[in-house]
Length: 256
Image: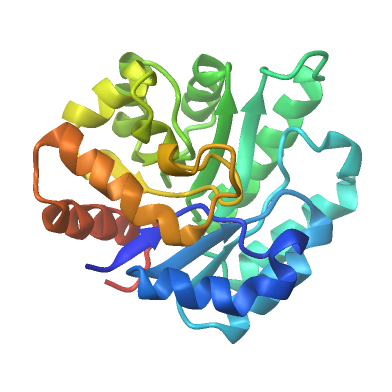
């Protein structure tokens, strides 16, 4: 079984001295390919360097909505240039986050729309970060007529919102959350959502599976997310591995 981790921060400083063995263990666990999203300009160089040097790593740099203090207008110009060079698989992670108190919603919205414009010009999909703002993100995608799809990272919305994303060409990113019995809403969605709308991710080092609660999350744990999905859907893990890998390849235009 080959799995694709569609959202993994293996490029961050915390992993820097351990990158090679962590990647090797992920591959040994069947995680053959990983998508590395960005959060601010300071991390793009290493992210892009790793993806140039290592087969099976794909870059998706972007400007995260929670790091507004780190972003500058020049960073949008640089992102536009990167996108036009044709080496990215997506822009990410971008979106809206209303969960944290005191966020500047207007600034987040402006940043999101600027990056949507960049993705549209480059015909790139996007990796969406959304918390407590799914209706606003969906409305923006429709208003901007965004048609290149992508992945809703660590989806935590309602079934109605999930269906709307699917209609706009997005897959739902399922992560360690589905391994927790208390996460009833996302587990119910994962159990019977159309198969063509599902992909897997770890969000390492965040959102560890239940068996690693309180620990650092790692890409090698992605098979545990697959196992939980197989149990929820009552389908063979091998079939779901093939399905989610094919979905990731389709939505991100990765080699099959």
